[in-house]
Length: 46
Image 1: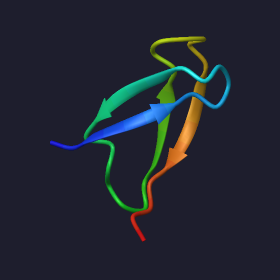
Image 2: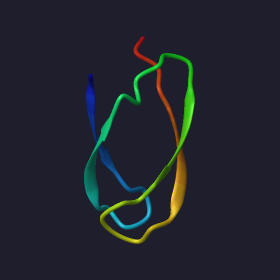
Image 3: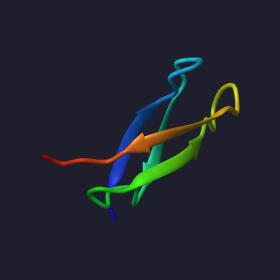
Image 4: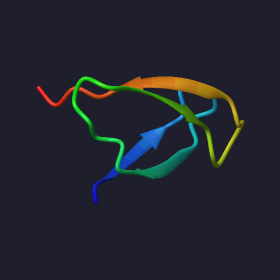
């Protein structure tokens, strides 16, 4: 299990996502601790 610390690009809230680490994948996330808006995150470990 991996943890990623994320920051909402809209309101700046921080939270931890679990298992969002598949290289080359785009994840649709929702701000959990702030505004509730959705945004996309592309994971690339290179």
